[in-house]
Length: 164
Image (cartoon, rainbow, N blue to C red; front, side, top):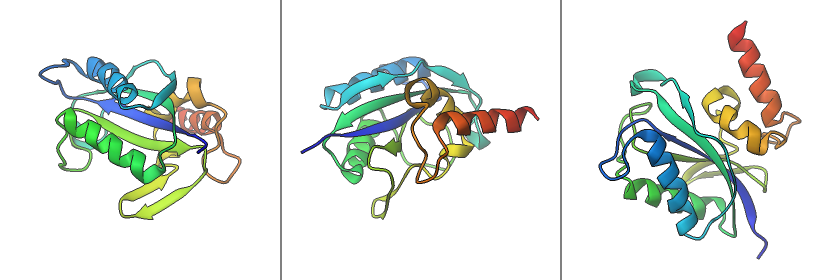
């Protein structure tokens, strides 16, 4: 079976008893992803971004590119298990979290399912600078969906729009 390539967004804004501060949690989560058999092809720098909504503290964000033969729902299940291993509990939307792992792009183009609820590319990717900024150095030329919009174009538009 031919492997798929995925872009995974990683975020944390709460300390963890074993791993420490959010930046350390992001690094530890990348190691955990590699330890379950996903091939890490590229990783972005970890950046600090302001929180949206009631999350409070700023986030440590990063992105990685991985290769695996898993389809999107199977990968999502694996990522949710890793979040659980880090103490992630379901709570309010936009709330603080120890670890957030999201599939934002994949080499297969589009995926949509209701169980589990999954949309790839992530439906809000073009509106989230905290996702686009880490993706830029590792997946700048990847297309977002069916159109011609690429990660670098979406990043430029969002930065330009916010600056204006």
